[in-house]
Image 1 (cartoon, rainbow, N blue to C red):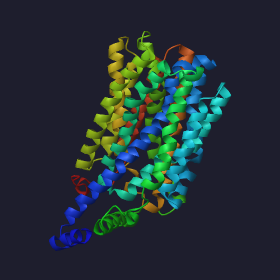
Image 2: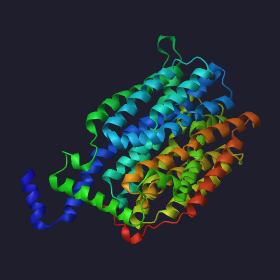
Image 3: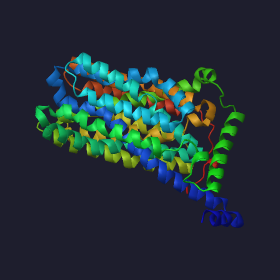
Image 4: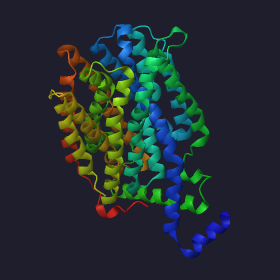
Length: 446
């Protein structure tokens, strides 16, 4: 059957048919699994925020200490992310992503047995080290399989994992807090045990399921492998001809890389500043809500954000425009996030939180197409890792800043106003990006 299919393509000259079928196969095989991995990754980062509903009082953690413990994950992540991404490029995604998943799952489960702030700090730092390289590694992996014109939608679909993990994780995590107290162990401890297991299991699955490169994909037809590998190679050669980098030193010296890192840092300040604190923000809007009710309420902003992200990124792919698709959402979202800390109506504050969450998420798909406009494959691993590493400093700044301001003022409102301003600043910085991308280069995705 494989031979007859091959002759059919040759006889009809249907390169478009090969293209369409190849993209369909690649998307159908890789994206659902990668999304599942990222769902688990994000949940294992932010379940700390749900655990805080009980853990803070159990371990005597103040708001300021909790904010610091939330953010220290990103210190370990930042320090080890670039080496991790370079190792992934050398040994292959299949082996390295499996290693990352298994090691971080083990650390998450160990967090269940922490008895004081120091132990939690060590484990949160270790979790960052274990997970370092996962997200930029996935982004790099997508550049092996998707052309530039298809990347925004692919990244947006991947980023829906952020909303999916909260849509599923928020009610599940808060239900565990309220309902699971087996063997006399507190619900917040079981939360870490139960949600750490899937990472270990999926790490084992990833080892045999993922394929490193199109050239090695036995699940593609020979002509499909040839077409996809050729298309990716052609784009990399084009980037090099138009000034793409070929070395780590030139990547680090490029102001455009640091510009993108600053933008991403502002986005991440808001993403995790809001993500870690949203359970407590919602409780502050209505003190009568149970843990489970808080989890159900949190479904709304993340469901809206997931839908908006896909629609916005598809529009970016269709028009070929990247800069304003990156800039506009965080400007609007930042204003809404700051406004949620200023208004007195709980209903209006929650509506503004929905807008803010949509603003944060909609920027990610278009944003992660920007590095590939000037980074050839040989330096993409370093460039993406640098942007993500520096940007993820915002994962420490955001939660820590909200925690400090909450401790000082007695309310999360001041923290929301400050991280809202950071988000809007990120949008303004994105508007200043000079993109070489041309709408004529983009075609409607099949």
